[in-house]
Length: 305
Ligand code: CO
Ligand code: CO
Image 1 (tube, helix red, strand yellow):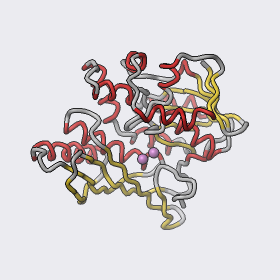
Image 2 (cartoon, protein in one colour):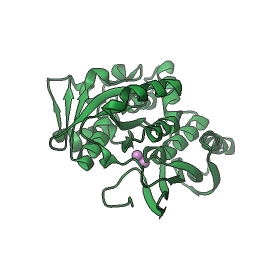
Image 3 (spheres, rainbow, N blue to C red):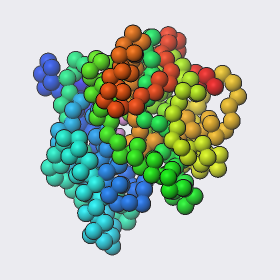
């Protein structure tokens, strides 16, 4: 049902009318110093694509590439971080494969179940939906500040807290409210993944800059220009389809192109459901931010500064 044409967050194969299988994989090099945190973030990130489709993950396999000289206690901490995050998600890690490599890489292959009639896709937006984001932005600049040894401890801890957080509750909310449109915000940034939704849905997204949540250090590191290379690639690739209503300063603009690791879901919520959605989110302890709305028009993003 979902595969290579019009790529989405995960592949979906229909098994029957009301049941499908959803499969995805993701792995990356360390984004933080702690081995346990790294494993936990990589697993939360891999699981996220299943939640972004409205699926329920149930089984996973480890994919690891580890240097020969890496002390065994470090490797086992990476895998323990992943295993405990999977357990929190209700997912069994049933095996996996490890190869040798100079630079460590870790992630999961994740399999889940999905109801094909109610799955979330990037193309499911409708005119009049509001856009809801479930984690703040700023992971790319903050982890780059860490790599360049310019980060403050409280800022990286805040980023780690968000990156380790599962998108499970956000996905559950999407299912409870029968939503149709969603994706997770990862390497292509808010505007890049937003553009994927705009294009797949054939609609215009209005984003309200003042409503976008950022983690504490984001603006500070943005002002120092500590963006990962991917942020510039994102602006080059998606920038021409994004219109700002006023001149915006460079750090503020770049923050919208900042690649996220294990970012939140971006969901389309029908306006009439929004109040109930926000109430239920707060009952479940799931933060949500309304960052924009969906309109008829050509596929593009318009940012109100
Ligand atoms: Co995704
Ligand atoms: Co992915």
